[in-house]
Image (tube, rainbow, N blue to C red; front, side, top):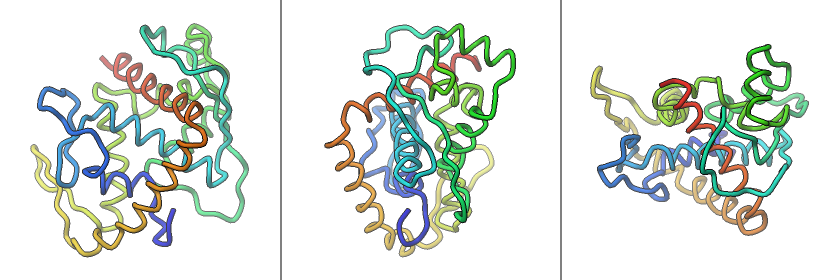
Length: 226
């Protein structure tokens, strides 16, 4: 978070036009953002990845790579995670908000324990007890379009801060009530982008593993909801 206290993923969402892959019109998961329509699955996975990175760098969670990232051809109940994530005890800090808040709660709840069904599914998938995929599958992501849930969390945080408005009952569209307020956040977005690039330069394999788990969780969540 920058000086405004806005989560990194909310900033990335607000300026997604600058970095997210544009939809080619054939993308069934396409999502509207400010100024563009982007590929939903790819952008959602990258937002999840950025959220994990932001929680890790702020000391909210620990992340450990379990095995090298590799191409995912098939998934059995989500498959085995590339990384494991666990919450850290943080005192005298307000709980994360937005997408980061969702991720922190999902990882914390998973660490607190799992039900018999969840344990059976995890063991069937071969996942680690604290595997990132198991922490995400079965959450609010488990819907026909899990990428939409990721966008909704970022959009909701931006709307709660008065930065955007969602208008329309059936066909929703985004509006910016105060364009100058959003433009004023561009330097913070640039700081987040620079920090992400520095992290990628130093921890490319690690970041790729986290991203792979984010993709796998979204795909598995979509399959479980269909």
